[in-house]
Length: 354
Ligand SMILES: NC(=O)c1ccc[n+]([C@@H]2O[C@H](COP(=O)([O-])OP(=O)(O)OC[C@H]3O[C@@H](n4cnc5c(N)ncnc54)[C@H](OP(=O)(O)O)[C@@H]3O)[C@@H](O)[C@H]2O)c1
Image 1 (tube, protein in one colour):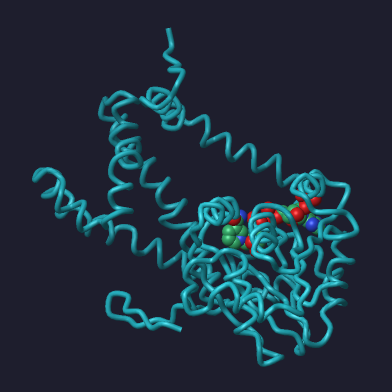
Image 2 (cartoon, rainbow, N blue to C red; image 1 turned 60 degrees about the horizontal axis):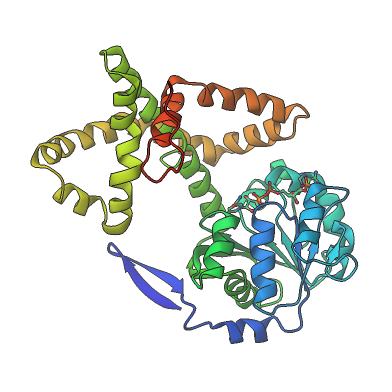
């Protein structure tokens, strides 16, 4: 375990060099790993484990298009592909990779197969942290562990195929066997993690829910919309408003921030942009800080989790979601965005309206 200094705070980080694949394979040599669910994380993690040489099977309900996808990926019915119950029965490690709402629905199938010494693995702290709401309460004699890749299952697989690892966090909720940490780290290496950052279930889910509601998705769309609307009110054209709100950010500035940091970007832009950005960023921080506080409070109280459980378990969930997504898709800003994107030089066929 390496200790790395993150801006003054020292944290534990596991590197692949100190816990190589061979060690992970030895740690899990007597285990049968069942990946339950073949949605987004399921395929990424299961295929990486398989290609890395672990003893892995998949559990998936059927009939389902997802079952067919697993077959197409080379999982063999009755050999490496089973229904959820049979896979849980065969497994010594159950990787619970159903959607968070489905984990609640399928818990009564999984729980009876959590016999002493098995491990229950998650890629999100949701089910366990909000256990009073989800009902996911594992028996005391199993390990309960987490590896959460910091990205989609698609990126996890893609980066694995490129020979790179995706950074992930890991956590131990319950160490019944005394080997929970080695099991978690070995699984992290097996699924294709790069560096493994230590956390706990509660912190993982609180930061994840805050981040996606905040700067990763919710806040960013809110700030985009506020700026775009103001530019439009002041007489700017849709293309100008979109370019100055989104296109320049995603195409030009964010790749530079990703590479070198915001400090570098500020230091390497025009002096006019620099002066303005330095003067205004603290105003935006102070204006949004109370909203971030309210958001974290709602995450910590479980209100956000309850909202997501209630809305995702409704029967007409998909139709309602489509209506909400249509509001964004059909907004002038994102319609303008579609046209702006079609003009990018790399687009083969430029769709210019006559
Ligand atoms: N999405 C990501 O990249 C990502 C990133 C980091 C962590 N995570 C975490 O990883 C876990 C899995 O997420 P995911 O996005 O991969 O999930 P997902 O794609 O939404 O999961 C879909 C899987 O759940 C099954 N399922 C849905 N409803 C079911 C039910 N009622 N009974 C049985 N099976 C059901 C689906 O089967 P059918 O197709 O038959 O419905 C499919 O196998 C979650 O804890 C999530 O928070 C996800």
